[in-house]
Image (tube, rainbow, N blue to C red; front, top):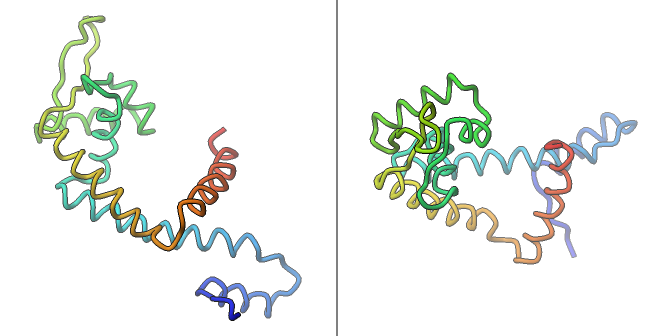
Length: 165
């Protein structure tokens, strides 16, 4: 049986020939992750574009959508989920309000605070985008069985836990 090879195999082989003193196993893993990340980025941008959303808009709108009814969060909660500065978040909320994808309302529980609320149009767009996104991601993973996907997800989770701590 002939082992299938990819571009990363060829790159690693060339390096091993030139520098046999080094362990290139990290390159074999992370170069593939990097290449897959580029494919995923293209698929995500296309899914968002087809829903007339920018990736940063998706970040905010999807956080609101995942919050569940009534699809509202404070700016501070949005900051924690999107990992941007407060100035950036204020600008993003302003732009989303201008596009009528979210609205601001006073927080009834705290008169000094506001809530950011997903509008009907925002919900429609984010729902369309997530449908397109999961379809595109399923295509990217099409060569893997469900068991392979679960095994890979587990390995990637194990790896990412070290970075998210």
